[in-house]
Image (cartoon, rainbow, N blue to C red):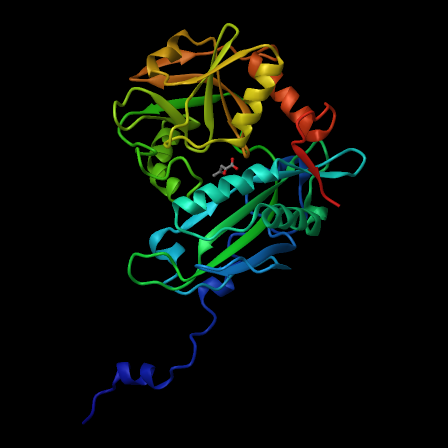
Length: 366
Ligand code: COI
């Protein structure tokens, strides 16, 4: 007597699987009414995202806005299998008078082009990138927080979306821009950062992709971040991978030290991201009469610094309250008088339009 054949019964109906958990969940998006006072830094399902495609050797098509939502990818997509992808970050600001402005989108466009060259990807032209950022901000205008509550974080993403099995550039690319309203990047970010100097995990190596905004720079630091957070630190400060003694950057922000009228930051030479907020802070520091040195900084120099702070698009300018290295905790004064607060006030003033933008950093969206 034939026994029940479980395999053949399931093979006999090759219809698509029923709605899976992927389709039936909300994908982790926050939805509903926005509580502008408690934005934090999380994904919100906004209205539209921008999408454009290109072949490996072609130019990006004009692209279009489509409803925000999941995208379909081949299981062999270059980004899923080999991490061929870059991210960018920009912010849109709503002014008291209702005007909408984006901060330095051209710089993100240029940085994406440099990264795309490193990762063997075609890249949208600068104007195309900037236009997509502006279109995304405008299409999601209702999600831009009131002036004193937060910003609209705009995330351009370039990925190898075509199918590829061997290690090689994907045959097709997708440029996508989405946006979410955000407040503070770190939970409880009114407090200063407490950094843990990591001696085993390195964020980047010489010749690697640490100097560009490759998606592959982020998952490898999550373990160090998780360990540091479990010990009560807010983030990790990474050292260079050759000597294990020069400071590089935190998990997603650049670092600065202040000694008198001199502001120091590690020189970016391939293993440190050229932050747009970092560049802006350097210019503002010059305006305020500080001398800025970009050079190698030994971790021991943290002991003689009067102030330390980190910068990033998502983070802004954030004071560091302590750095812990080899079980020794170095503490820094935090007050409204500290230099990083002055730099932050200037930067935010330019971004929000209350301080003159002498360098054409802000771009109106209308
Ligand atoms: C940014 O600051 O814009 C970043 O890309 C950091 C991040 C959230 C990965």
